[in-house]
Image (cartoon, rainbow, N blue to C red; front, side, top):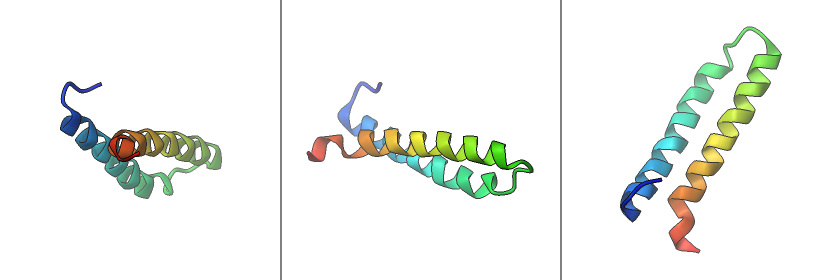
Length: 58
């Protein structure tokens, strides 16, 4: 994904931040089905960001 190992951790952290901040907006969606889909996608985004951020610590 990124050429440099430090950049990969930065991108992972950025992905988690985007997921968390977008989650604040998602609770205002009008339909429950949209909220559920958005929360699932945000969870997947945060999980990928977590793996990218902490993959070198295993």
